[in-house]
Image (tube, rainbow, N blue to C red):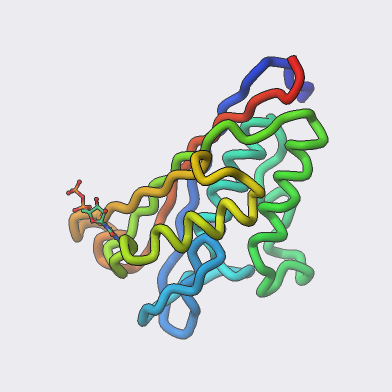
Length: 166
Ligand code: CDP
Ligand code: ZN
């Protein structure tokens, strides 16, 4: 699909992972102390996967699972900043820069508020973005469904990309 050239584009990302014992919980590249972590082929970083998909979506590009198939042994245990960096590279190649990103992580546990600023700073570092560009929110799932029953963790994000020269 050839994306029309617009001064800005929006993208949406969503991801969900099962939580299981024996895995580390990595969110936004930060290891969060918890009894469970995300089951995944890669490091299972639900936030980085969501942002990667939002950026790719804004560019009308194939999604993270298409670009980095979990059937490919190359991505086994891979750090998810590889996926994020590739989406940023594709964004820059097309002449866009990040306007802003707003994310909502949905986790019954652990409490993420003590880690939110650390995660946000690391995201700004990974994205080479100003502090004003990235926002993170956290919600519980009111103890219902798989997220609320601590069997999964999910994340949503929207991004706005701005064309560098228009
Ligand atoms: O009060 P409301 O139902 O809107 O939200 P909640 O899901 O009960 O979460 C209350 C607050 O706890 C949120 O605004 C977050 O700041 C925080 N929270 C958190 O730090 N870590 C989580 N895993 C979930 C929520
Ligand atoms: Zn994922």
